[in-house]
Image (cartoon, helix red, strand yellow):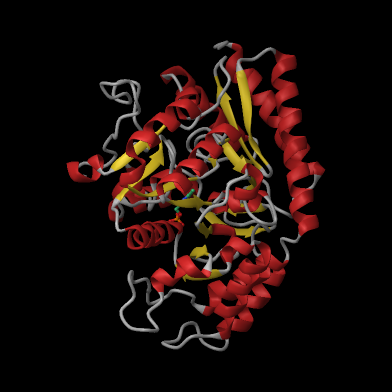
Length: 440
Ligand code: PMP
């Protein structure tokens, strides 16, 4: 079976002291995930001694895989000097400079400890800059665990339309106040005309539009150029702050995701790979906008801080990780991603199975069903497709490949064509087998 005895008994123990037996639902699956013992490169070794080819990479945060020697050296070097100070360190300057050097729109940065924190700080910043409080976000898109951006994270066909046929603002958590729902406008990811109509109506009341141009939860499909230009124009017209949430998609190019879509965001949130495997988040933007957080002349318009923000371990790991994610490495990883998706797509087509692969750069995801996936609604699985996705993920685990529970994955720089071929061959074989009895 996919999960060994040591992991099963660890899970039985964890269930007693942790609700659901897991610290996060996103990485949990039935019957229970294997427990990690250690990682090396693109492999993770579980506590039963099984070696898994890791396409989850802690939810795409480990661009160089596990225990990457240059990152470990940098962290060791920083750690021996002390782990955190109630003083600034030079390491935070270096990482902020590294971001600014990659993308001029990241002229200034404030660090925090997670993507969630970065997003909520960016939204507060946008409110401070505009004097408005409502925001718009795209249906089905994840931007962290914050009430406002969790609106319409996971609506179902039964509740996703409002009475006018537009995406409804749907509660994700029990107890989220109605006021939050009223103040979050929901946009369809793959319907630029409808986006334009909604923004024409609501635009002047909005502080921010938040967008991930390659949204993982909403299908792991790139946003269309049309949708991107609709929101860009609406933001310019109505004085809305455009926040690009590149927590995952920053890896798509050396400069990040926005330039690939013609987007010119006011604020950019990043996390994951910019921390080299340690906790991190960041809000970046031009100096004139980032001034909203500037406390040096008295109380800032918007406060942003945290005890472990810009801790030197995350700064050191992040700096080294980014230095090693150079243009040639970005290009190589993106080409490997193209190769992977091409091989999987061809394998599915040759086998005549109703499955597709989406993604861009080093990111990919498998969908079950006959239709083309263009956004949240077309990615929304029927209950049969949902069961098949779960079976495929478990079957891949049996084949020693770790995907996320929704069958998405990311490549890391230690991978080569050898691993990419193995992933593609195994996926095609598994999907053929699983869908053989359930075509479409
Ligand atoms: N935004 C996006 C686009 C994300 O994918 C994530 C995490 N997967 C977050 C924000 C939240 O980041 P974190 O888990 O570091 O809080």
